[in-house]
Image 1 (tube, rainbow, N blue to C red):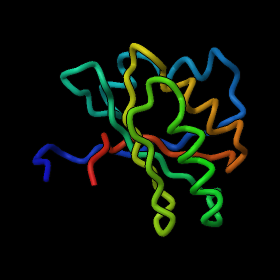
Image 2 (cartoon, rainbow, N blue to C red; image 1 turned 120 degrees about the vertical axis):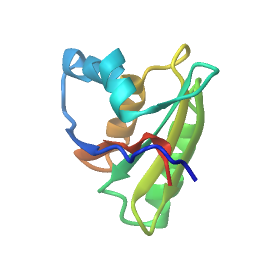
Image 3 (cartoon, helix red, strand yellow; image 1 turned 60 degrees about the vertical axis):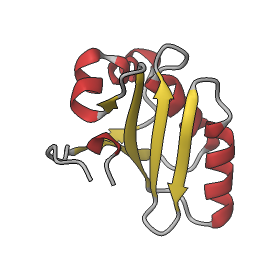
Image 4 (cartoon, rainbow, N blue to C red; image 1 turned 30 degrees about the horizontal axis):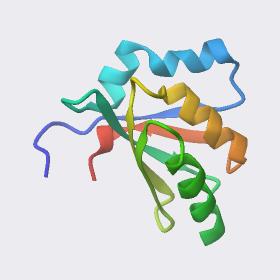
Length: 117
C-alpha cells in the first residue's frame, strides 16, 4: 500500500479535438495525475462511466490492451474503473483516450489517482 497522498480524479469530456487531447500528454498533467515508473512507464486509473455489461469490459480490455505500448489495462465491472499502465515512449495517453473513445463506451472519463488501489 502506498503512503503517498491520493490524487484527485480529473473529469474528462471526450469529443475533444487533437490539440485538446494533447493536454493529457503534458508533463504537468502526467506528474499531477499519474504515477511514473522508473522504466518510463506511467500508471493511472480511469473511471469508465459507460461500461454497462461484461461485453463492454471484454471489448475495452481486449482493444486497449492490444495497443502497442499498453502494458496493462484492466477494467473492474463492479466499480467501472480501469487501471492503465503504459510506456509513454511507445504510446501517449491522448492516443489511448482516443482509442477508448472510438470504442464508444461513454463520453465521460475520469483520469487520476496515480494507479493506486
